[in-house]
Amino acid sequence: NPEGLGSELLETIVKMAPTKEEELKLKEYSGDTSKLGPAERFLKAILDIPFAFKRIDALLYRINFEAEVKYLRKSFETLE
Figure 1 (tube, rainbow, N blue to C red):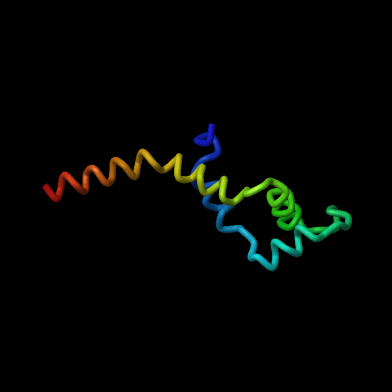
Figure 2 (cartoon, rainbow, N blue to C red; figure 1 turned 180 degrees about the vertical axis):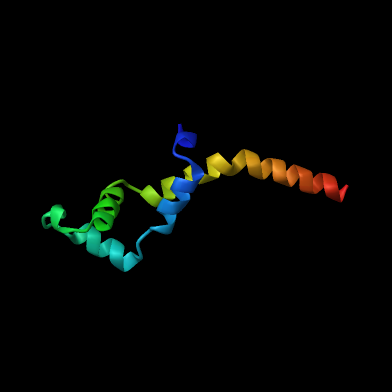
């Protein structure tokens, strides 16, 4: 149930997305993960999930879809 996560939490995670350079460094890191900071450990765990940030974007789209449709319908009604 994607709604259980909440759009605010998902938006926060998307904002934390690493740059390509940071992503590469985290993926290549093979040392003891306990030596990483909490943020780096979290991002490394997320990056182990294939297409994690694209999946989060898709969840956000699903969560916000109904609200967007309602907004557009009201906008079109105003134009009529």
